[in-house]
Image (tube, rainbow, N blue to C red; front, side, top):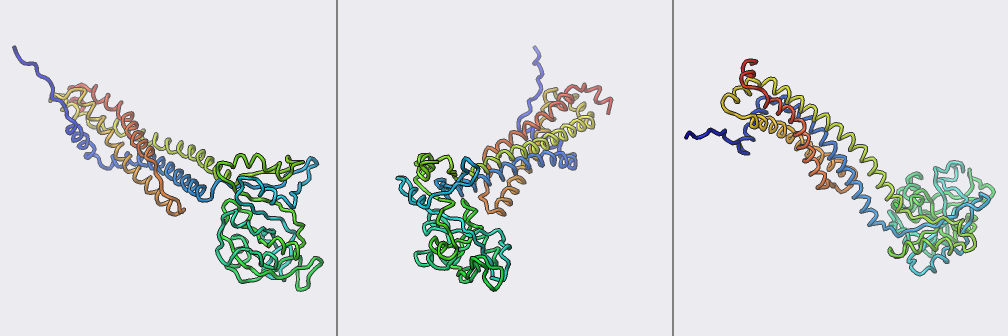
Amino acid sequence: MKDELSPARLGAADVLRVGLGGLRARPARVVLSALGIAIGIATMVAVIGISSSGKEDLLRRLDRLGTNLLTVKPGDTLFGERAELPETAPEMVRRIGPVTAVGATGSVDATVRRTDRIPAEVTHGIAVQAATIELLDTLEVETASGGWLNAATARYPGVVLGDLAARRLGLDGAGGRVWMGGSSGARPLAGGGRWFTVVGVLRPAELAPEIDRSALVGWDAAQRYLGFDGHPTTIYERSADAAVGDVRSVLARTVSPERPEEIEVGRPSDALEARAAAEGAFTGLLLGLGAVALLVGGVGVANTMVISVLERRREIGLRRSLGATRGQVRVQFLAESLLLSAFGGAAGTAAGAAVTAGFALWKGWPPVVPAWALGGALAATLAIGAAAGLYPAMRAARLPPTTALAAA
């Protein structure tokens, strides 16, 4: 009884060798086809990486700044007019049990200018505000130069400038003077004006950007020299993290027991969290564009493999005549497609990670590329390679040996 002949099996090493051999024969076409995959993968990895780096930076900033800062501001009355906070509002807030720090500012009807020769109308968008001594500790803001108001400077003509206000006035540190009041020339107008000494300049207040655009004067000094009425316009308070919700629910009624609906209570950290959510939505749009680029790259791979099958009919016929089965031919071309996509995916992943790192370092963010993004890029690459190579591989396997040799 004769032994039946069975075709030799292709091992993994043989499949890899045959697939690489097919790609090496057409290097220029392989590079151009892999480029399409690389662009798509690089776009997706970079988008996810940059978004993740930005979110990580926001989370670190939130951890550093804290989410326990609440603000109290006057809202509108039933008649559409602006409400007014009581002069005793900061003290009333301080009596709430879980509250650990309270600071306040009050709007002052005055202007600040570099000299008394500058018209009062030229304000540069800088607001003059009275400030309590506890404000700096409540906001947890540091001074970039000089110092903060104390029991002495808060009673006399001293001013602390926010970061943006100092830059707009052309001052880079403490020790200078600014003109505050209602004068548009050398002679004071009605209501007066006088020089104030700059005792300090603040660093940026991320949770209170209005402070950056302000010139801050002591509460007593604002009343004595600038006609401040003593009513706060914004109260800042910090409490224990676990008690933020409870404190928020009672702030309005504490400040104005008779008309709590006229009080607005806010949480500045919500703006950073909303920004993170908005960036996530924008990331989805960019991921869609990356997916389109990846799809176009997959079409390019499929086109390359179809052309490869047409050009290599002689090779296919010769292999079939020498005993290669349809399955082995199919595996050969499918392996070439997968390898082609894998090369593009690897290049794209490296490029995307490099773009993420470069952009994050430029912005001062921590570079973050999630592991799931790298795994997703690999899975997407293999899926595109398999989908793009399936039809060409099946077409190559269906070619009869005699027809392929005759066509060649």
